[in-house]
Length: 76
Image (cartoon, rainbow, N blue to C red; front, side):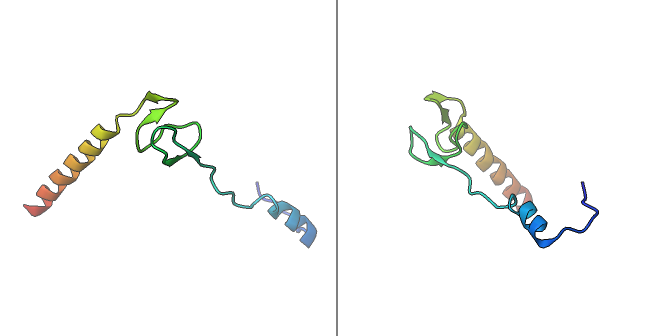
């Protein structure tokens, strides 16, 4: 919603006081020690709360296979 009336400097400053950027909070993975977002699975080892929830190795293999096929298509 757009404010249609002019604000003085103090009102503008009060509005902008909520526009500050905040650095994302990171925690360390208990399994591998890499930084990760809290309440989310680790993107390095694929574990969340000690359980394996992501198969990271298959995702990496799939990505490499796709890149290899793309390179072969570009080479033809």
